[in-house]
Image (cartoon, rainbow, N blue to C red; front, side, top):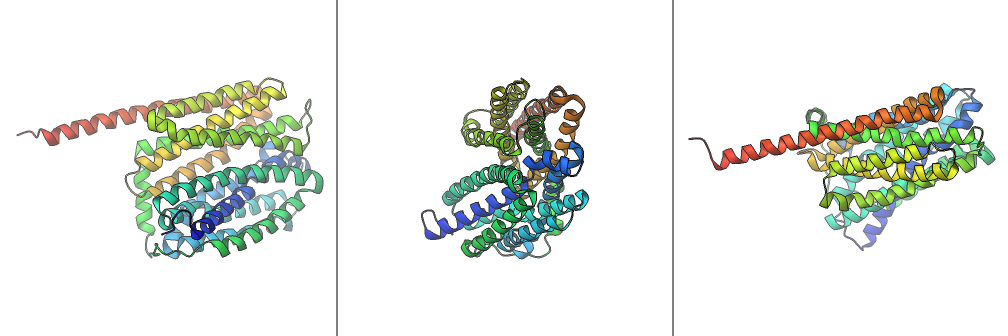
Length: 409
């Protein structure tokens, strides 16, 4: 297996981080462009949100199919197919001037992205030693965050000065060269043998996970948390380009640097879960985000920035705890369980955009506050239900243990 501090480790970990970086650059490049694209296509904010939602929604819906495919043809083949599809999906966006066709091309992009996102961690788990795995995953997750930030900044700056078409062309070229480099560096699989006929088994695993309240409650928490987090930034973009601020797209895209605080709190969540209850941590993270949303309501750029920093800190903290919870509490087929969490996560991000943008269109930031509090209230309710479910299961386990040690004669 791939050991830490070896040439194979350096090559493989860099290749996986680069692939992750490319995936999230492509996924979020259009987010800062939305106000400009709404003007170009003479579309409402809700209509133009499909350019972001189409890719996140198709990514969510194809994660599990890609994971199943990797069981049959191998992880590496799926990852490389996914990366080499990116430049073609990107260039397809340039073949039309229709918003509908551009949205469909973005949907194709989401399908392409899902292949790498679905199986990269599984590849690491099978090919790396346990110690090397922990370090490699850390780099992989950091690349997720850095790719998302870079893609948004790139999309904002290039679109303002050279147009969205040049932004798409540049990203497609970078994706092609990146895919070629990943293909050259990423080692062939040695510790996984593809197996045919796994479709029914995976279906049983999916149904089994969804029947466990301790899992799907955390999945819904993750989905609602992401629905609020990513789309509060989208709404803030529309707010800042409108009067009285009237900021440029490039300046507005700078708000995504606030994501960096989430990288810190995501790492801190691991220490929290070793000492305190992860459920209490989800409540804490949600509360920090709520405070950030209310602080951002003040008509001050400083207050907005501080509010976004708090929203990012709380959201990443909650996401890390919920994601880890699902992975730890799944009794079997943990890879399928974490894929299901990501399905909820990205579906939440897709649908949450339409909800919060509608709140923005009909009630400005006060409407966003009201709509946001409804979803935050649901997260608090789900945390309470998850706590009750955990306490109830703990009591059942104690009773079962007593019956084993003191059987009734």
